[in-house]
Length: 255
Image (cartoon, rainbow, N blue to C red; front, side, top):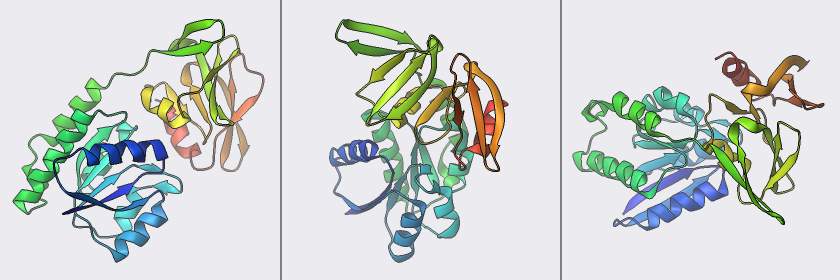
């Protein structure tokens, strides 16, 4: 029996991961599901598992905080939409880095790699041939979404990525603002799922509910000590960064 810990704060992502696990030709027990840094620390201080599937950006911080505070002996497969953390993953018992949205086939390859380590009874990370090259290849193969389908009572039409100012999660749906400041509703996706489909060089989630296009940032001002106010071209209101995202946003916007 292989015991697995899932560290993930999005319910759809957890469901997808559990479905992939259930389809494996191996007896697997999901020991726990946690969605916060504090929950991960508490569980791992009292329990051991054979493998961890771990998102990186959680409700209360970055999951690397867990692995810096708790000494773990098992490997970690990181599942995330952000490609900039792969070096941290390698330093935190990471054996693979699944970029969302990932397929069942890609998941299976990660699982096979875990089995290789398990059969060798060793966490000798030098045994992974050309790990860095593999990660870079994964990033190069990632295909980002180029347009969204919008369903209306008048029919279906397409909204090109370059014509989007920002996305806003509101009342259970995602609203898209185009370059004419017209609103379009996407009912089948969450803001995080949309973020995972977009090029992180162009789009950034400045807070829990708003995802902006760098190409249309007109002006940035200080809002308070830990937040910034962002003026989007053609949109009259300012959008504000959350305290947790402000520092990362500063780095992102200058790239």
